[in-house]
Length: 385
Image (tube, rainbow, N blue to C red; front, side, top):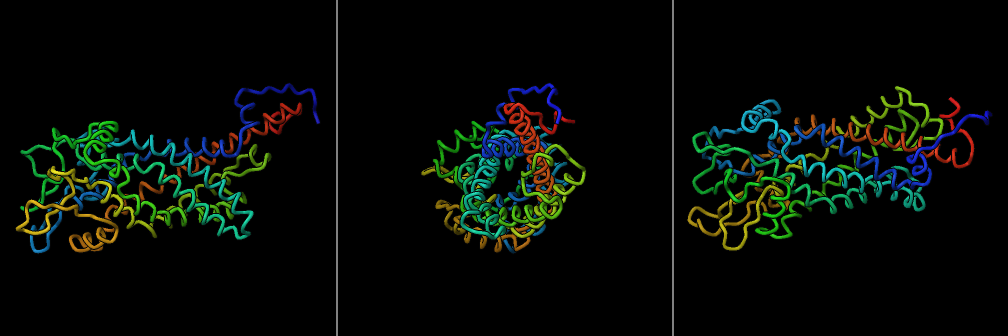
């Protein structure tokens, strides 16, 4: 072995040599989520519009035959948003996405890998370990970041322009209150902070946890996705998620990344197909505004009867109630509204997240091996090349 090779260590090498796996996972997860949010924000806006539009104006059976929907499909929705709001409309809610994805994936990957280590001392079955680790990590990140996602959903679901001279974006019946705030309405959210302020002052803290129950039920999604990803990645590359030996970390082959790509796509398609309806339910609950006492409901509210025009109640009162309301007013197809768009958003998002996470983890591990080698006074694999 050569001993006269000059060895240099940067501050990053020295930090990586002493950093814990939790720090690696938090950093790699945050970078992965941030990158994914930037790349897929326009598709997320389109998906949210398609999911939410049925909740703003009920299509009453026997009335409003031929009810016009503004948002129709991926291309049609993109055209409407671009025509009415421009590039800002395509990136509406980007602030909360960045604020949300950073802690979401930082918490998720940290808790997931910590849980795997702990559960490995209790069970030997790899699938059971990955399954419960996904549930624990998903619950932790969901509870921590739910307020951010509620704000994001509200920002994305509202429209930036409303002209009285044009057709209504969401036609309504005579007994249905105006579903969307106008541009000058106090319920039009101008920014992330503006939305948080208005939600807190008029609806209280509970509004930030709207849709939390279906979001927690959505843990079935990660319970399918990540065990499947771990299994497929191991089959394709011989390595688990985020793991690599020193030799593997120094040798990045095309087959390695192709395996990560295939595992990401297949696992996300499987999970999204199996658990999509809960996303529609969650979106309806999140975009519904909770009425303050003595105030007229402006968004997502219905009237109990034709004769009772004063007493108003939230249209969606819980998971079961939401399911029944959607079935009655829109039919079972509404539970899959925007699913095609969701796939076109979710699959690239998952792929970008996992590719970025795996890449950053690989780079951090290289820095760790190099830093430790320097501190021990020996050349690393990279130094010998």
